[in-house]
Image (cartoon, rainbow, N blue to C red; front, side, top):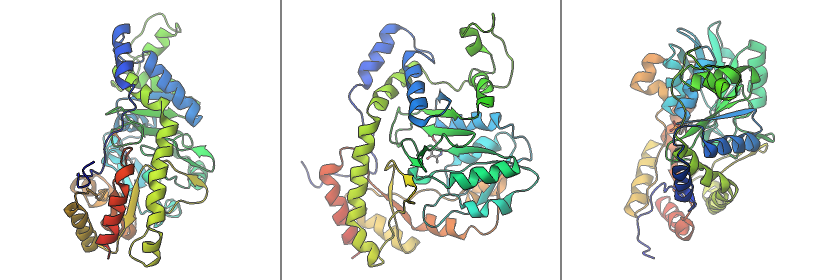
Amino acid sequence: MDISAYIPFNRPYMTGKELWYIAQAHSRGHLAGDGEFTRSCAQWLQQQTGSGKALLTHSCTAALEMAAILANVGPGDEVIMPSYTFVSTANAFVLRGAVPVFVDVRADTLNLDETKIEAAITPRTRAIVPVHYAGVGCNMEFIMELAARHKLIVIEDAAQGLMSSVKGRPLGSIGHMGTLSFHETKNIISGEGGALLINDPALAERAEIIREKGTNRSRFFRGQVDKYTWVDLGSSFLPSELIGAFLWAQMEEAQSITRRRLALWDAYHQAFYGLEREGKLRRPAIPPDCTHNAHMYYILLADLDRRSQFIAALKAQGIQSVFHYVPLHDSPFGAEAGRAHGDLSLTKSLSDRLVRLPLWLGLEPQQTRVIDAVFDALK
Ligand SMILES: *Cc1c(COP(=O)(O)O)cnc(C)c1O
Protein backbone atom coordinates (compact mmCIF):
# COMPACT_ATOMS: atom_id res chain seq x y z
CA MET A 1 0.00 0.00 0.00
CA ASP A 2 1.20 3.48 -0.90
CA ILE A 3 1.21 5.20 2.48
CA SER A 4 1.28 8.63 0.90
CA ALA A 5 -1.97 7.90 -0.97
CA TYR A 6 -4.58 10.61 -0.84
CA ILE A 7 -7.25 10.03 1.82
CA PRO A 8 -10.60 11.48 0.71
CA PHE A 9 -13.24 12.66 3.15
CA ASN A 10 -15.74 10.10 1.88
CA ARG A 11 -15.69 6.98 -0.25
CA PRO A 12 -18.99 5.20 -0.91
CA TYR A 13 -19.00 1.63 0.39
CA MET A 14 -20.34 -1.19 -1.78
CA THR A 15 -21.32 -4.49 -0.21
CA GLY A 16 -20.65 -6.46 -3.42
CA LYS A 17 -24.22 -7.58 -4.07
CA GLU A 18 -25.59 -4.37 -5.60
CA LEU A 19 -25.05 -5.32 -9.27
CA TRP A 20 -26.35 -8.85 -8.71
CA TYR A 21 -29.64 -7.48 -7.35
CA ILE A 22 -29.85 -4.92 -10.15
CA ALA A 23 -29.39 -7.81 -12.63
CA GLN A 24 -32.27 -9.63 -10.93
CA ALA A 25 -34.52 -6.59 -11.23
CA HIS A 26 -33.46 -6.33 -14.88
CA SER A 27 -34.36 -9.93 -15.65
CA ARG A 28 -37.72 -9.64 -13.84
CA GLY A 29 -38.49 -6.74 -16.17
CA HIS A 30 -40.03 -4.49 -13.51
CA LEU A 31 -38.02 -1.26 -13.63
CA ALA A 32 -40.52 1.40 -12.50
CA GLY A 33 -41.18 2.06 -8.81
CA ASP A 34 -42.51 -0.26 -6.11
CA GLY A 35 -41.24 -3.61 -7.38
CA GLU A 36 -40.14 -6.48 -5.12
CA PHE A 37 -36.85 -4.92 -3.98
CA THR A 38 -38.49 -1.57 -3.20
CA ARG A 39 -41.12 -3.39 -1.15
CA SER A 40 -38.45 -5.36 0.73
CA CYS A 41 -36.62 -2.12 1.54
CA ALA A 42 -39.82 -0.49 2.82
CA GLN A 43 -40.63 -3.51 4.99
CA TRP A 44 -37.10 -3.58 6.36
CA LEU A 45 -37.35 0.11 7.27
CA GLN A 46 -40.66 -0.48 9.05
CA GLN A 47 -39.13 -3.32 11.07
CA GLN A 48 -35.93 -1.43 11.79
CA THR A 49 -37.64 1.78 12.93
CA GLY A 50 -41.01 0.54 14.16
CA SER A 51 -42.69 3.12 11.91
CA GLY A 52 -46.14 2.15 10.67
CA LYS A 53 -45.36 3.02 7.08
CA ALA A 54 -42.14 3.60 5.13
CA LEU A 55 -42.33 5.02 1.61
CA LEU A 56 -39.18 5.00 -0.51
CA THR A 57 -38.51 8.27 -2.32
CA HIS A 58 -35.84 9.41 -4.76
CA SER A 59 -34.15 11.52 -2.07
CA CYS A 60 -34.55 12.84 1.46
CA THR A 61 -35.27 16.18 -0.20
CA ALA A 62 -38.29 14.56 -1.90
CA ALA A 63 -39.41 13.04 1.41
CA LEU A 64 -39.21 16.49 3.05
CA GLU A 65 -41.26 17.99 0.21
CA MET A 66 -43.90 15.28 0.68
CA ALA A 67 -43.91 15.95 4.42
CA ALA A 68 -44.46 19.67 3.81
CA ILE A 69 -47.51 18.91 1.64
CA LEU A 70 -48.85 16.42 4.20
CA ALA A 71 -48.38 18.93 7.01
CA ASN A 72 -50.67 21.30 5.10
CA VAL A 73 -48.38 24.27 5.49
CA GLY A 74 -49.28 27.17 3.24
CA PRO A 75 -48.31 30.77 2.45
CA GLY A 76 -47.30 32.72 5.54
CA ASP A 77 -47.25 29.70 7.85
CA GLU A 78 -44.13 29.32 9.97
CA VAL A 79 -41.96 26.25 10.48
CA ILE A 80 -39.38 26.13 13.27
CA MET A 81 -36.03 24.53 12.47
CA PRO A 82 -32.31 24.98 13.10
CA SER A 83 -30.31 27.27 10.83
CA TYR A 84 -27.47 24.77 11.05
CA THR A 85 -28.84 22.27 8.51
CA PHE A 86 -28.92 21.33 4.85
CA VAL A 87 -30.90 23.59 2.49
CA SER A 88 -33.53 20.91 1.78
CA THR A 89 -34.85 21.11 5.36
CA ALA A 90 -35.93 24.70 4.64
CA ASN A 91 -36.58 24.56 0.87
CA ALA A 92 -39.30 21.94 1.25
CA PHE A 93 -41.40 24.42 3.24
CA VAL A 94 -40.42 27.54 1.30
CA LEU A 95 -41.75 25.74 -1.81
CA ARG A 96 -45.19 25.75 -0.13
CA GLY A 97 -44.96 29.46 0.66
CA ALA A 98 -44.07 28.93 4.31
CA VAL A 99 -41.43 30.82 6.30
CA PRO A 100 -38.61 28.92 8.05
CA VAL A 101 -38.01 30.32 11.53
CA PHE A 102 -34.46 29.58 12.60
CA VAL A 103 -33.70 28.79 16.24
CA ASP A 104 -30.24 28.38 17.76
CA VAL A 105 -28.60 25.00 18.43
CA ARG A 106 -27.30 23.32 21.57
CA ALA A 107 -23.57 23.62 22.21
CA ASP A 108 -23.13 19.90 22.94
CA THR A 109 -24.85 18.19 19.96
CA LEU A 110 -25.40 21.08 17.52
CA ASN A 111 -29.06 20.00 17.47
CA LEU A 112 -32.03 22.38 17.74
CA ASP A 113 -32.03 23.81 21.28
CA GLU A 114 -35.36 22.52 22.57
CA THR A 115 -35.47 25.13 25.33
CA LYS A 116 -35.52 27.96 22.76
CA ILE A 117 -38.38 26.64 20.61
CA GLU A 118 -41.36 27.80 22.65
CA ALA A 119 -40.38 31.48 22.51
CA ALA A 120 -40.31 31.24 18.69
CA ILE A 121 -43.90 29.94 18.43
CA THR A 122 -46.46 32.42 17.02
CA PRO A 123 -50.10 31.99 15.91
CA ARG A 124 -48.72 31.18 12.41
CA THR A 125 -46.48 28.32 13.56
CA ARG A 126 -47.53 24.98 12.05
CA ALA A 127 -44.58 22.62 12.44
CA ILE A 128 -41.25 21.91 14.11
CA VAL A 129 -38.46 20.21 12.17
CA PRO A 130 -35.73 18.83 14.45
CA VAL A 131 -32.59 17.74 12.58
CA HIS A 132 -30.59 14.90 14.14
CA TYR A 133 -27.11 16.21 13.39
CA ALA A 134 -24.41 13.58 12.89
CA GLY A 135 -27.01 10.89 13.62
CA VAL A 136 -27.27 11.98 17.27
CA GLY A 137 -30.83 12.37 18.50
CA CYS A 138 -32.56 15.62 19.50
CA ASN A 139 -34.48 15.76 22.78
CA MET A 140 -37.60 14.32 21.15
CA GLU A 141 -39.53 13.75 24.37
CA PHE A 142 -39.39 17.46 25.15
CA ILE A 143 -40.17 18.48 21.55
CA MET A 144 -43.16 16.10 21.21
CA GLU A 145 -44.64 17.34 24.49
CA LEU A 146 -44.23 20.96 23.40
CA ALA A 147 -45.73 20.22 19.98
CA ALA A 148 -48.76 18.47 21.51
CA ARG A 149 -49.40 21.45 23.76
CA HIS A 150 -49.29 23.87 20.81
CA LYS A 151 -50.94 21.48 18.30
CA LEU A 152 -47.94 21.47 15.97
CA ILE A 153 -46.77 18.79 13.57
CA VAL A 154 -43.27 17.39 14.08
CA ILE A 155 -41.22 16.24 11.11
CA GLU A 156 -37.86 14.70 12.00
CA ASP A 157 -35.12 15.32 9.47
CA ALA A 158 -33.39 12.01 10.17
CA ALA A 159 -31.37 12.12 6.93
CA GLN A 160 -28.27 11.18 8.94
CA GLY A 161 -30.05 9.14 11.59
CA LEU A 162 -30.84 5.63 10.34
CA MET A 163 -29.69 3.05 12.95
CA SER A 164 -29.58 5.64 15.77
CA SER A 165 -31.98 6.02 18.68
CA VAL A 166 -32.95 8.30 21.55
CA LYS A 167 -34.43 6.78 24.72
CA GLY A 168 -34.58 3.48 22.85
CA ARG A 169 -36.66 4.88 19.97
CA PRO A 170 -35.22 4.83 16.43
CA LEU A 171 -34.72 8.29 14.92
CA GLY A 172 -37.35 9.16 12.33
CA SER A 173 -40.04 7.09 14.08
CA ILE A 174 -40.91 9.55 16.86
CA GLY A 175 -42.38 12.64 15.15
CA HIS A 176 -45.58 12.55 13.09
CA MET A 177 -43.27 11.98 10.13
CA GLY A 178 -39.56 11.35 9.63
CA THR A 179 -37.31 11.55 6.60
CA LEU A 180 -34.22 9.48 5.72
CA SER A 181 -31.48 9.84 3.10
CA PHE A 182 -29.57 7.20 1.14
CA HIS A 183 -27.36 9.73 -0.63
CA GLU A 184 -23.86 8.36 -1.24
CA THR A 185 -22.47 10.48 1.61
CA LYS A 186 -24.72 8.75 4.17
CA ASN A 187 -24.20 5.37 5.92
CA ILE A 188 -26.61 3.20 3.91
CA ILE A 189 -26.66 4.34 0.31
CA SER A 190 -28.19 4.07 -3.15
CA GLY A 191 -26.43 7.01 -4.83
CA GLU A 192 -29.47 9.21 -4.50
CA GLY A 193 -32.40 7.93 -2.43
CA GLY A 194 -34.55 8.52 0.60
CA ALA A 195 -37.63 7.52 2.52
CA LEU A 196 -40.57 9.09 4.31
CA LEU A 197 -41.65 7.43 7.55
CA ILE A 198 -45.31 7.98 8.36
CA ASN A 199 -45.79 7.52 12.09
CA ASP A 200 -49.24 9.11 12.34
CA PRO A 201 -51.60 6.61 10.66
CA ALA A 202 -54.01 9.42 9.76
CA LEU A 203 -51.46 10.65 7.18
CA ALA A 204 -50.78 7.28 5.53
CA GLU A 205 -53.36 7.22 2.76
CA ARG A 206 -52.72 10.78 1.62
CA ALA A 207 -48.98 10.09 1.64
CA GLU A 208 -49.43 7.30 -0.91
CA ILE A 209 -51.54 9.57 -3.10
CA ILE A 210 -49.06 12.47 -3.03
CA ARG A 211 -46.21 10.10 -3.89
CA GLU A 212 -48.15 8.71 -6.88
CA LYS A 213 -48.68 12.04 -8.69
CA GLY A 214 -51.87 12.82 -6.77
CA THR A 215 -53.64 9.64 -7.92
CA ASN A 216 -55.17 6.81 -5.92
CA ARG A 217 -53.06 4.29 -7.84
CA SER A 218 -51.98 2.39 -4.68
CA ARG A 219 -55.62 1.78 -3.70
CA PHE A 220 -56.30 0.61 -7.26
CA PHE A 221 -53.48 -1.98 -7.05
CA ARG A 222 -54.87 -3.22 -3.75
CA GLY A 223 -58.28 -3.66 -5.40
CA GLN A 224 -59.89 -1.02 -3.18
CA VAL A 225 -61.15 1.09 -6.12
CA ASP A 226 -61.95 -0.11 -9.64
CA LYS A 227 -60.18 2.66 -11.51
CA TYR A 228 -57.54 5.14 -10.54
CA THR A 229 -57.77 8.87 -11.02
CA TRP A 230 -56.43 12.28 -9.97
CA VAL A 231 -57.67 12.98 -6.44
CA ASP A 232 -55.14 15.36 -4.81
CA LEU A 233 -51.92 17.34 -5.17
CA GLY A 234 -48.88 15.25 -5.94
CA SER A 235 -45.72 14.58 -7.86
CA SER A 236 -43.48 11.66 -8.81
CA PHE A 237 -41.59 10.94 -5.62
CA LEU A 238 -40.86 7.24 -6.05
CA PRO A 239 -37.49 5.76 -7.03
CA SER A 240 -36.95 3.23 -9.79
CA GLU A 241 -36.78 -0.45 -8.82
CA LEU A 242 -33.09 -0.35 -9.89
CA ILE A 243 -32.45 1.96 -6.92
CA GLY A 244 -34.46 -0.37 -4.68
CA ALA A 245 -32.30 -3.32 -5.82
CA PHE A 246 -29.07 -1.45 -5.02
CA LEU A 247 -30.42 -0.30 -1.68
CA TRP A 248 -31.50 -3.80 -0.68
CA ALA A 249 -27.89 -4.99 -0.89
CA GLN A 250 -26.99 -2.20 1.54
CA MET A 251 -29.85 -2.84 3.96
CA GLU A 252 -28.85 -6.50 4.26
CA GLU A 253 -25.49 -5.26 5.60
CA ALA A 254 -26.79 -2.35 7.68
CA GLN A 255 -25.81 -3.91 11.02
CA SER A 256 -22.24 -4.70 10.01
CA ILE A 257 -21.78 -1.35 8.26
CA THR A 258 -22.85 0.40 11.47
CA ARG A 259 -20.56 -1.76 13.61
CA ARG A 260 -17.56 -1.03 11.41
CA ARG A 261 -18.30 2.70 11.32
CA LEU A 262 -18.60 2.74 15.12
CA ALA A 263 -15.16 1.11 15.41
CA LEU A 264 -13.63 3.92 13.31
CA TRP A 265 -15.54 6.57 15.28
CA ASP A 266 -14.41 5.08 18.62
CA ALA A 267 -10.79 4.96 17.45
CA TYR A 268 -10.86 8.71 16.73
CA HIS A 269 -12.66 9.43 19.97
CA GLN A 270 -10.15 7.57 22.13
CA ALA A 271 -7.17 8.98 20.26
CA PHE A 272 -8.30 12.57 20.83
CA TYR A 273 -9.14 12.25 24.52
CA GLY A 274 -5.83 13.84 25.54
CA LEU A 275 -6.11 16.67 23.01
CA GLU A 276 -9.50 17.56 24.45
CA ARG A 277 -8.10 17.59 27.99
CA GLU A 278 -5.33 19.91 26.84
CA GLY A 279 -7.97 22.22 25.36
CA LYS A 280 -6.70 21.78 21.78
CA LEU A 281 -10.04 20.59 20.42
CA ARG A 282 -13.50 19.56 21.51
CA ARG A 283 -14.80 16.08 20.69
CA PRO A 284 -18.45 15.28 19.78
CA ALA A 285 -20.76 14.78 22.77
CA ILE A 286 -23.25 11.91 22.77
CA PRO A 287 -26.02 12.37 25.38
CA PRO A 288 -26.30 9.28 27.61
CA ASP A 289 -29.82 8.44 26.36
CA CYS A 290 -28.69 8.33 22.69
CA THR A 291 -27.17 5.51 20.68
CA HIS A 292 -25.63 6.65 17.43
CA ASN A 293 -24.69 5.29 14.02
CA ALA A 294 -21.23 6.87 13.66
CA HIS A 295 -22.43 8.90 10.71
CA MET A 296 -19.79 11.56 11.27
CA TYR A 297 -16.67 12.32 13.28
CA TYR A 298 -16.17 16.04 13.76
CA ILE A 299 -13.94 18.10 16.00
CA LEU A 300 -14.39 21.70 17.15
CA LEU A 301 -11.40 24.04 17.04
CA ALA A 302 -10.83 27.41 18.69
CA ASP A 303 -11.94 29.66 15.83
CA LEU A 304 -12.28 30.06 12.06
CA ASP A 305 -8.58 30.88 11.52
CA ARG A 306 -7.45 27.83 13.46
CA ARG A 307 -9.84 25.72 11.42
CA SER A 308 -8.56 27.06 8.08
CA GLN A 309 -4.99 26.31 9.17
CA PHE A 310 -6.03 22.82 10.29
CA ILE A 311 -7.72 21.96 6.98
CA ALA A 312 -4.65 23.23 5.09
CA ALA A 313 -2.29 21.23 7.33
CA LEU A 314 -4.19 18.00 6.69
CA LYS A 315 -4.39 18.76 2.99
CA ALA A 316 -0.60 19.13 2.90
CA GLN A 317 -0.43 15.54 4.14
CA GLY A 318 -2.86 14.31 1.48
CA ILE A 319 -5.87 14.14 3.80
CA GLN A 320 -9.19 15.78 3.02
CA SER A 321 -11.09 17.25 5.97
CA VAL A 322 -14.13 19.44 5.44
CA PHE A 323 -16.27 21.99 7.23
CA HIS A 324 -20.05 21.74 7.08
CA TYR A 325 -23.14 23.91 6.78
CA VAL A 326 -23.12 27.63 6.18
CA PRO A 327 -25.97 28.65 8.53
CA LEU A 328 -29.11 29.16 6.46
CA HIS A 329 -30.03 32.49 8.08
CA ASP A 330 -26.66 33.81 6.86
CA SER A 331 -27.09 32.56 3.28
CA PRO A 332 -28.34 34.91 0.54
CA PHE A 333 -31.64 33.09 0.02
CA GLY A 334 -32.18 32.05 3.65
CA ALA A 335 -31.95 35.64 4.83
CA GLU A 336 -34.72 36.55 2.37
CA ALA A 337 -37.01 33.49 2.73
CA GLY A 338 -36.62 32.85 6.45
CA ARG A 339 -36.44 34.64 9.76
CA ALA A 340 -33.95 34.22 12.59
CA HIS A 341 -35.52 33.93 16.02
CA GLY A 342 -33.34 35.53 18.65
CA ASP A 343 -29.63 35.26 18.87
CA LEU A 344 -28.03 32.55 16.73
CA SER A 345 -24.53 33.12 18.05
CA LEU A 346 -23.87 29.46 18.91
CA THR A 347 -24.91 28.42 15.40
CA LYS A 348 -22.48 30.95 13.96
CA SER A 349 -19.58 30.11 16.24
CA LEU A 350 -19.94 26.31 16.06
CA SER A 351 -20.28 26.31 12.26
CA ASP A 352 -17.06 28.36 11.99
CA ARG A 353 -15.16 25.96 14.22
CA LEU A 354 -16.35 22.53 13.08
CA VAL A 355 -14.34 20.23 10.84
CA ARG A 356 -15.22 16.67 9.76
CA LEU A 357 -12.62 13.91 9.43
CA PRO A 358 -12.59 11.05 6.89
CA LEU A 359 -14.84 8.17 8.02
CA TRP A 360 -15.58 5.39 5.53
CA LEU A 361 -15.32 1.63 5.40
CA GLY A 362 -11.87 0.75 4.09
CA LEU A 363 -10.17 3.61 5.93
CA GLU A 364 -9.11 1.24 8.78
CA PRO A 365 -5.49 0.57 7.69
CA GLN A 366 -4.86 4.30 7.14
CA GLN A 367 -6.76 5.78 10.07
CA THR A 368 -3.61 6.22 12.14
CA ARG A 369 -2.28 8.49 9.38
CA VAL A 370 -5.28 10.78 9.90
CA ILE A 371 -4.88 10.66 13.68
CA ASP A 372 -1.16 11.47 13.45
CA ALA A 373 -1.91 14.35 11.08
CA VAL A 374 -4.44 15.78 13.56
CA PHE A 375 -1.82 15.67 16.36
CA ASP A 376 0.74 17.28 14.03
CA ALA A 377 -1.63 20.06 12.99
CA LEU A 378 -2.48 20.91 16.63
CA LYS A 379 1.07 20.74 18.03
C1 LIG B 1 -28.25 14.67 3.33
C2 LIG B 1 -29.25 15.52 4.03
C3 LIG B 1 -30.44 15.95 3.41
C4 LIG B 1 -30.72 15.72 1.95
O1 LIG B 1 -30.72 14.38 1.57
P1 LIG B 1 -30.85 14.01 0.01
O2 LIG B 1 -31.16 12.55 0.05
O3 LIG B 1 -29.52 14.31 -0.61
O4 LIG B 1 -31.95 14.80 -0.57
C5 LIG B 1 -31.36 16.67 4.15
N1 LIG B 1 -31.14 16.98 5.43
C6 LIG B 1 -29.99 16.62 6.06
C7 LIG B 1 -29.81 16.98 7.50
C8 LIG B 1 -29.01 15.89 5.38
O5 LIG B 1 -27.89 15.54 6.01
